[in-house]
Image (cartoon, rainbow, N blue to C red; front, side, top):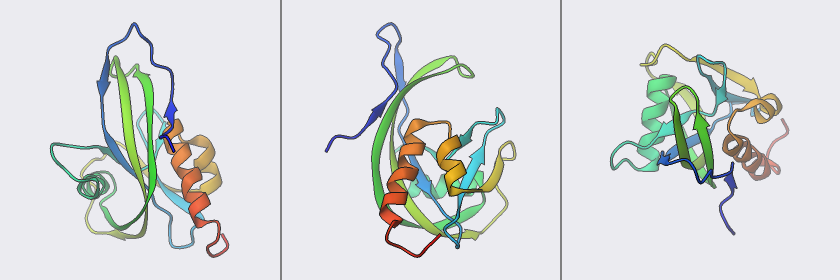
Length: 153
């Protein structure tokens, strides 16, 4: 099976590779997902860019502390997907391969280190429809398939 690729590579652009790790993280009811709203009101799954030689687990843990001040229990690999996109904010074209994990047991451990994002628990169906990145919507769909046989939502 091939990892899905979203977006179209424009041959006239030079792309910066930005490798990411993200989590699909429900609350204890399984009905809401942890979501980040950026200052431009775009919605994203928690996570972000791998720094240096970080493992996936280290990246996700660091990003969750920075963005939310929380720790989680990392679960199953949901898959990998990538996207070509242009950031108007950064005036940069990106190739963004990302790895997605299910996670659980949200625990607040400190105040977030970043204060410019809005953090929320959003109903799963709403998040699945409104996340900005198609790779993030794809990851929620993978998580829903994984959890289809679990407890009712």
